[in-house]
Length: 359
Image 1: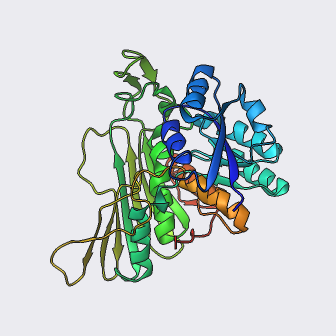
Image 2: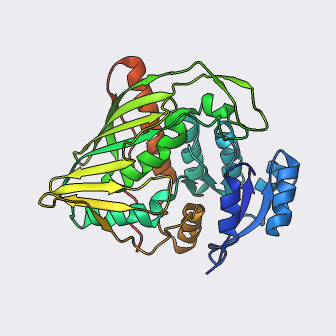
C-alpha cells in the first residue's frame, strides 16, 4: 500500500506519544517525515530523537511537496489557522481536539476542505481502542437491549498542579468541556449515535488559579471560562444522556461513562484511554461481569485516528475520526454553554454518521 507521509506542526506536551507511535506501532502503515514548532529547540530535538527532518517554520512544512497530511497539534487557538493553511495548500489535515475554537471556524474549515477535495480528521481517537470498541460491539450485539439513557462524568481540579504551561486551559477554547468533553462526547456518539438537543448550566468555580507545577510555580492565572458544566443530551436514537465536566472538584467516585439499556447496564472505561475494564450487569444478574477486551489496541495508541485516515485516503473509504464527527462534538459543546446562557434548549444543527466499528 502507498503510505501517506505525515508532517507534524506543534511539538508540545502531547506530541511525545504521537512521535512514539507514528514511528513505532504505526510505522508500517504511515510515514512520519518532518516536524516543526515555533520554539525551534523543541522541533530540533524531536527531529534528532525520531530521525525525521526539522522544518524551520510551519509555513515551510505545510507547503512541502513531500508531505501528504498535516498533523496539527498546536494549542486550540491555532487549530483553525494551521488547518486552513494546510487545506489551502492542498493537504489533508488532522487536528488535535477541539477541531477549532468556534463553530464558524470549523464550518469554514470543512467547507474549504470539501472544495479542495482533501480530508479533515480530528481527535480524539481513543474511541478506536479496545475498551470502547468492545463496548460498541456489546451494544450492537444487544447485550443490554435498547439503550435508553447514559451518564458521563469528568471531574478533577484542573491542570495547574502538573502541566508545565496550563494557562490556556482557562482561556477561550479551554475549560473542562472543551478540553475533556471531546473524549466523552465522541465516545457517546460512537456508542449511541448523534445528538439532537442539549440543555445545560455552566459556572465558574474560581476566578483565579495559582500554578504549582514547574517551571511557572507561583504564577497566577485569571480564569476566563466556565469551569463546571452540567449538560443533558437528547440522542437521535431516543436515549437521554447526562454529562458533567469540571475543573472544580477535588475528588469524585462517579463512573466515567455508563450506558443504561432495557436489559442491563454497561460500564464504559475512561474514554481518555484505549483499554478497559469493561463491565456489564444484565437485568437478572446479581453482580457485574468483566468482559474480555477485543484484541485491537488496548494500550495508548494515539495516532490511530490519523493512521486510519491515511489508509482511508488510499482505500477511498470514510475515515472514522472524521471532521464531521469532530464538528458535531464541537457544536454540542458550544450548545451546552449556549443553553446555559440563554436558559433554553439548544437544537443541535449538525449531525454525523456513527463511525463504523473496527473489523
